Amino acid sequence: MDKTTGFSYYTRIELMLLMKPLKVNLLEGAKMGRPEKVRRFSLWKWGLLALAGLVILVPVFFSVASVRVLQAAAGLNPLKPASEQVSIFEEVRRLVSNSDKTLKGEDRDRINLLVTGIGGEGHDGPNLTDTMLFVSFQPSTGQVGILSIPRDLWVQYPGYGLTRINNINAFAEAANQGSGGVATRDVVSSVLGQPIDYYVRLDFAAFKTMIDDVGGVTINVDQDFVDYAYPTDNNLYQTVRFEKGWQTMNGDRALIYARSRHGDNGEGGDFARSKRQQKVIAALKDKLLSFDTLLNPSRIASVLETLRTHVATDLELWEVAKLAQYARKIDTSKVINHVLDDSPNGPLYATTIAVSNGDAYALLPRRDDWSDLQRIARDLLDPTKQPAQMAAAREPLKIEVLNGTDRVGLAQKTSDLLTKTGYNVVRVGNAPDRNVERTIIYDQTNGTEPEALSTLKNLLNADVSETLSGYIATGLTPSNVTIAPAVESASGTDFTVVIGRNAS
Image (cartoon, rainbow, N blue to C red):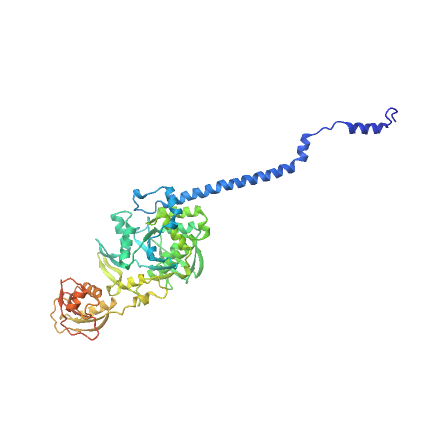
């Protein structure tokens, strides 16, 4: 006990400790008092940085991808003059304001496109049109029709005469590079009797790459088939197989499925192939317009870059965008698909045509009358009509064939030709006069079938005998036309053909 303070020794020590100045260890405080604050600040800071990154980088990503899209779209039209080229900013303006513009054909509520496929570089006949589709769309209803045109259809092409329709692109490209799409469009438009507003031409490389760009396509294969003669790139053959059912195909597989021509089980030939091609195109359309693609500018840019390299079209970018808006609303299951073929009720017949190196397989319109094909194209968007119904809308014209020479079998030979081309030969016999120099056609319709008469005249290299009223109605040139029939004909006959010595 300290007598001066009254505290014990130990109590004095405790008081000294309590009164000792407080020393703060800042280093210790950093270790013990701030970790939680630092963690909270770091999370907030990184969250802010992440948000800023999104605000900055996403628009940059979309902008870069969008520039790729616009640049890729700029080179799709091979014939677009330099004076009509516009800047990227103008492309953006047109794209944004496309709702105020109308596509060609919208004023008549029917937009027609021609889609063609060629082999392209590295293939035999790189500019021959291997695939040809007439696509028709009705904006008011969303109805779509696709008509496959066979490559072996023979047509007239100025400067080349009668030729396969798949040659036209190659002929035009040889004369003026880049003009093949327009030339093919014009001929198909004339053959089908329909205006064609736009064309799209792509090669096999584009077909494969586009499908790969969108991650493949899913197709329902109708039946098992094997093709033992599918061509390879080195002019050899390989065996390919497809099994019935839904399958997801990459670009190579889908191209093989679309191009196979020698499959068994009913999958051989161009007509079966045309149906498969329509399936693949429908599947590609669905994938191109899916959200997975539309919300991915980079994927869109990749597709358009493929198009720029391997596709030619007269569509502008804003027109592509507007068509895509329409296409998203199309129900693929309701698309009307037709194939022009030589079935018994079809509009075509198969024959051979003499060419420089032998005979060539050819498809021609029955009765050499293009009106059946034009009727099919005209009624393509009517779901109640089928090609057979459209082709059979007209009864075959009735023909009587008489031999006006002493050559045995000449009338029957002519009858076989006319029957093959779709005419209804009701009688074959001999004419009273067996000394006829030139074949002559007696028109019993009184001029009501001028197109058929003109076609028959050209087919048989014949002269025509008309009544006066029929002559005025047909409008045929005076050359090789006489007035008034001079032969008795079978009842109900439309034309009587008397074969002359000029017939081969």
